[in-house]
Image (cartoon, rainbow, N blue to C red; front, side):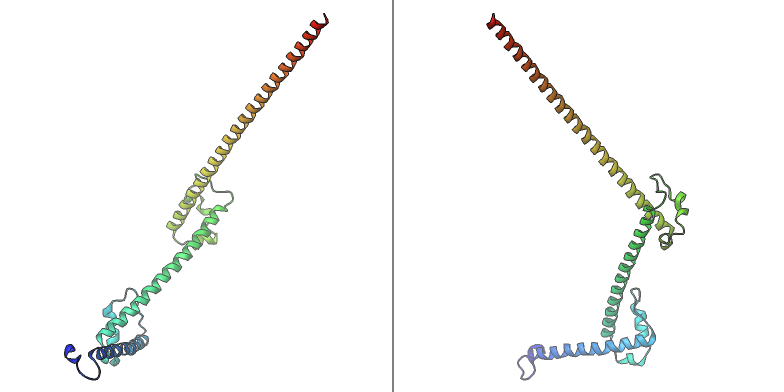
Length: 215
């Protein structure tokens, strides 16, 4: 049919196909609006876990759904599901940001503790010191408190090792510098002694020559 229509006057088969697609788009737009109105009236919200069957059941419960195209119902569901997934991703990101701020506050609480937390501290032994702190209360799960404390202790131990290593290197450099200065001073003193001895010998030789000439 498509080939036969190519030679006919008036609208071509391609034109008719374009009109058909445009009609489908316009119909989808109109029917999607009807679907949204039905969902709003029913108080139904498409979530990430919403099954397509439940969606169809709600839509089909009204007379307005009798003229709706089955393909458009599926397309509308997919569109609403994508929006639900986008909302869920954004919600998870926001939750992660909130949790990160809470963890940071919890670690600051531990870092500013008075007296300071020792390297061999155990969470169960020091827990009572922080129970009334807002940062403690913001982390509601005990397992999370233990995890953050463990992370804090790891960083604390790492910082102490780094500080100790830095001091050790500084001490070695100081000793090395001191030995160099000592050798330098010894060398200078030795040179001074040699110079002094040479001068002494020269003065002694001069006197010997002078005495010999006089005699």
